[in-house]
Image 1: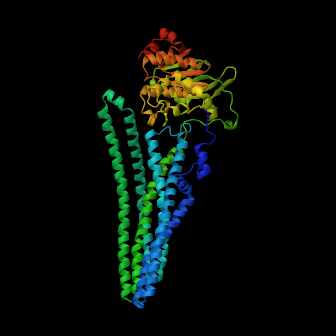
Image 2: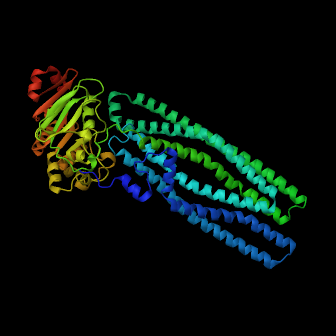
Image 3: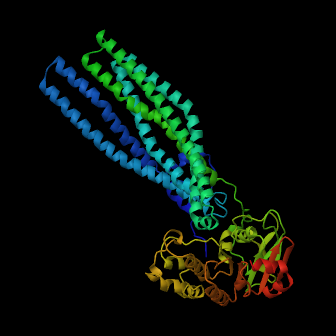
Length: 589
């Protein structure tokens, strides 16, 4: 199993201007995402601006028409102005159509770029390991969507700012006093909106956090529903979900309340502004400073710019929400990895021959408890029995470099070629040498054949692996054979069928070192016994570590390591069963 030549981040760098490994602030990340599709964003801003300008010209054209009608009564002139008005409507309609298309492209692409950055970080060693799957899903959907949505909002805000400037200039031409009122009203509105948007930004971050908690808990409950029913904990689980979801609802209501407050303030100021404009315009007309046509144009413009003013004022809460979401994504992008980096310059060197021996050198599996200190014979099958199930789950995670041990070293190699600390090996080398299959491994979307071939294109290896894991029986039992869809996380298959497909998938890769954690817990005893024997035969000449308490697998191992509170002991399954009562009790549970 080799690493891809170009990572997702590299691809993003080449196509979108993504920051790659550069660490930026949430604000910088937000603007980098928006700038990833500058052409569409600029096009949307231009077309929206011309659309808004076309609408702004409607009252001006109507005012000119009325002036000609009152002063001259010339039907030809009136007809000409009406033709201009029709052309203006056609122009603004087309502008909006093309602007909306460019805006949607910018919106979708900005959200997509953020998801690419987040996905690339998550698939790196220990990327997002501190976040639950539900939390990461929330960040990749809701938060990334808000960042992308702001791209569309930004285009409308730019257009609104442009039309405000043009409308102000037109009103200044009719009346300096009316133009000054618009400038003053806009400035006051922006200042007030900016002052109250900080509260919304904080509440929006809390809202997204609580929603992520609710999503993560819901996923955990669904995945463990069978277990919850088995122990009669449905009511307790439901009460906990009710408590968390109500917290998310309250956070959403507080954020919505803040957004509504900002909107209400904007509407109040806009209403005051329009009242002042209407009063001043009427006074100017009565005093003879404005003609009838100019009054119509001025009041029409004054009423029209309320829309752009609301758009500008609405940018503040939208920006606050987008920035809060960008901050949540930024947390994952810049999180300190739980693993240490490879040795300097090692990534550029040729792959060293690390052999197929595996050794634990005083490895502290958990922060507390005894150290694991043992060597696995190369090209043989070994078993690891941990009295603490948490420690058993931690060993495959350590070998997959989801995190590094707090003490000790994990070594690959052998006495003849030397040993290599896996923390110093290039990631490509480690992935080629060691393949880890955790107990809770899931199937990928697609067919059974897609899953069996995901790590190799060797048809012979796939066939041999399917036979060893009894996955060929699964293929014979399902309706469409190897072309049967496994559904989401393998939901169309039974637990035992999923385990056999997952086991065949890793066996087909033929990795020099294979680590299995309880690979057949959902398989019946007779089939499990035959699978263990076939796997041992298939893996002859390669190193296999089985982390389990199952005697069926342990009896096939050349060496078994037992780790409990008293330390680490080694021997065969039969030897340990005879001389270590604690081992005998652990495997008999």
